[in-house]
Length: 367
Image 1 (tube, rainbow, N blue to C red):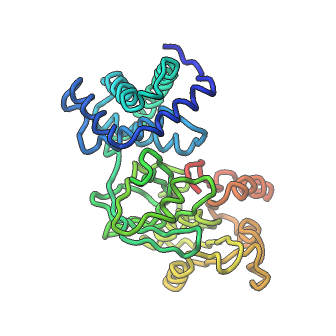
Image 2: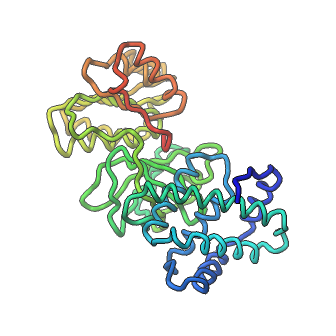
Image 3: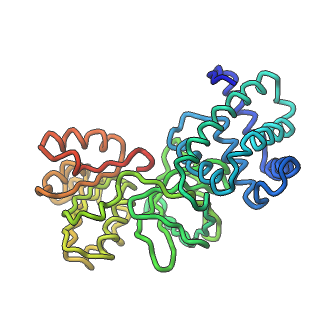
């Protein structure tokens, strides 16, 4: 089938059809796959698989969500050896949706769905080719949900099976409250002996997943985490250069994880962490930062307060401006924060003669 762009009404109609399908369809999907190819897909994973594949099928305007879906599905197709049976799975998905959305399902939508499935299947094949061996998702339990500010939550989750992540990476996160929607979050800690992971979430105006995680999720609930992905913020294991870390908002999370990584294996490097916020009260993770500062003499933490007239003069300004005052030759610079801060960072740093190889920005999966 040729790749043809769906017209806008067809895309909207397909999305409306998908929204009308409830989670009972996941069990029907598994039965349909089981009838056509017994033993292909584990029953307990059918809801995760069904909602992720359906969400990829209907598409949307969120590149980060699409990247998370492909990360999860690419690993799922590889882990369960589903690539030779992609046609069987796709046909089962369309048949299930057609049954459960029969009043809305039209011949025109059938054509749009087949075209969308063709594109989604090819994207999954490419993602599976890049995926490593291993699990596609991990079930975790929320054991802590703190609200340091009205729009930010710090979630602590406990893994049943250890998630093989490295500081600076990001993981796709999904809540059963919103099946099929995955959002990238970076753990705010280095791997711990007890297996717990800390996630920092800001509820953004258009962020359906973030609002669920901040406003609704409570201890005792389950979340799903997908395979970790590199963001460009991992430390070079061969380097012992001093570090200048520049954080804005919840972009602090991956950079705090880097500090913990250095603390786990001290190698003589010095670390300066600039933490940007509007005012002192907006420094949501101040208790944990104070503990790190007190525990390590090689670490300097400097707040950068952009709109706080009561701040010390050396702390007044945006995070990047304050960071430049603390820059020293030979430092590796890692930045994570709002898009405006990141867009401004590379030109300003390069204009000062800082080599591009020393500047590390996230690849767009998180922050």
